[in-house]
Length: 137
Image (cartoon, rainbow, N blue to C red; front, side, top):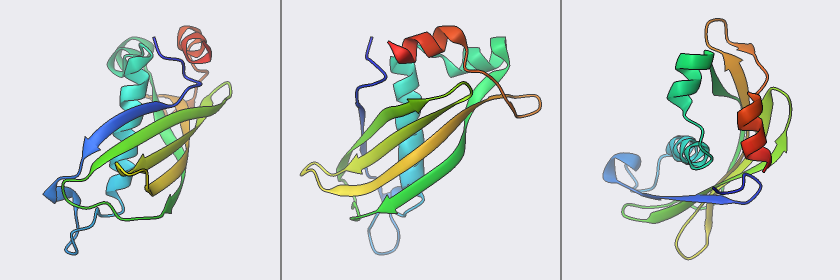
């Protein structure tokens, strides 16, 4: 099982639907790429988001996102999207994410605060102990 402290990488291909009229990835789509990479990161750590919701009644939501855009990706580019946990608190995680082209150029980077919340009222909840142990390993 991968360590949460190491960088997790997930690849995504840029499709026509991801681009704007100029043929460059529309800026908001980087949020989609980052979201998918976080979901795959959680999956790689053995976290089942559907089970968390159904059994525990909780889930992770983005509470804050800080994004810098550097270079535009284009149609058919293959991006490496990374996730790295930089801080774990009782009810939230701070993550750093990047989207890079195959040649290593940085397209976008983000600092994301993912909060654990109870679905019925969206109130902050402690991260479940078993999951906290997995991400701390």
